[in-house]
Image (cartoon, rainbow, N blue to C red; front, side, top):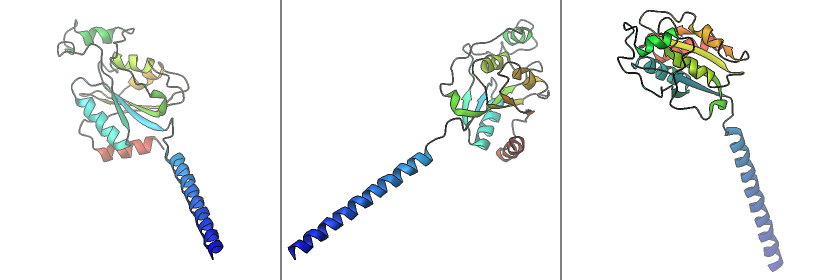
Length: 198
């Protein structure tokens, strides 16, 4: 009887150890399957001085379940800097200078993990602000999909996206962008992105 109990106890211990081992293996597999995949995320990067483009960028990020990054100038723009009626304002001078590259305050440390980049900006003088030139020249967009979107008081996106394309790697995939009203809804943007990203 004692020998039988000993054998029974050994069998139960063996079954318990086997079950624990199986559970650990399942957990390991589950962890591997749910680990974040690199190069498979979306980023909305935006520049906004008045808040209009910020609102568009936040709506786009909500529509795409994307991360968001504000392109902040190292030297912030004042209202006087943005006075496009003044020939001597900072923004006027920058937009007339093809080589102007305003410095950006912060960098994206994990840029490589993003496969799709949405770049949101206002239209200044029918173009993207020069700080967007700085942004696209600061990172390697090779193999990434890029979609420009913009806000404007009246101008369309025009050739601003195609110009920015010339500043990036030839292997970057630029899609046609669009101007949006600041009150565009999450659903409207979601539908638009779904169509363009097919």
